[in-house]
Length: 401
Ligand code: NAD
Ligand code: MG
Image 1: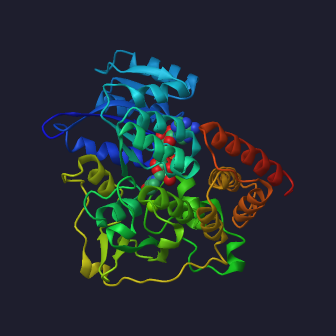
Image 2 (image 1 turned 90 degrees about the horizontal axis):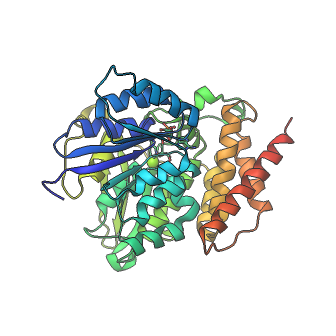
């Protein structure tokens, strides 16, 4: 694609990943142009982004917010000829439009599944931040990638690191880990803000504390997931699909400095690691330009200032969400969609002060034991498991007060 302008749709443009993506794009106006930007409700932030990047389309899921954005952009005070669309179907439309080369999938949660799949099915280069989409529907998602010939590139820093440490050309579709001489994948975890808290102290942590991650600045949902280690569990399932791995071939290693973003160990004993400052612009720039390299705006890693790297085992007793995800990764089926959906409901309830932090794992475990896992053969199987798990999780949460 060298020499030609890439047209990009950003699903979830107003979020943490969306904003970092626009920052990288703004450094390379000769390489990239913005085709569409989408958000859920945040029309003011989207208006600012439209003024700066002048996309052909802006999408808001919320109809009222779309009305406000239309009025704002149409006020004649600016040089922006963006067309404003509303509703969930418009997300799929701007992801699948034939003018689009690359889609950044950065909506949070299950809401990202259909628009991300629309990009996959139309054979785009898909930059996947929305891990929940792959966790929910991994088998069907990867089948869609194979069928359409889409290029799937991981944005999650760990998966992007693993991708960079893999043999060149490795993909889940062409080879297996063993055939490629790989002994295991080492998935690193910061351990989150509560890594050193006692079980007693974990009982009283607040949403604000959970969202104050020591190394990364992220949206609220993924911040809570990082604090509970559910994020690492989702990433374990994500890695199994992306790299055609068994969960037993992936070891989670806590590395509190978040400088090594993950590693790949080969049968000859070599361990390759990808390192860098904890800044999502690095994996975003990597995936945007791959196989080329472009400036991301991220500063050099200062080894002297970093001084040391520590490693420890995750504590599955204090952080049972990781254990639950490991069990789901090993057994497969719709259990992964159930785990994800119950977790989304539980995290939302925790953020609204309705349940305690430690209740997140209780909600997820209870719903997992209530709901039978099947091998999904069509997307509706996944969507039904997701809806049912949400109902069960809400019902269980109601019994708390
Ligand atoms: P965020 O909360 O900051 O942003 C979410 C974006 O999705 C916003 O633009 C919002 O408008 C949009 N959105 C929310 N709900 C929606 C809905 N129902 N329909 C349509 N759009 C909706 O989240 P984030 O931190 O940018 O994370 C986005 C995704 O990237 C998540 O899946 C997360 O796990 C993943 N991720 C994030 C980071 C990070 O550093 N932030 C790192 C790795 C992976
Ligand atoms: Mg990650």
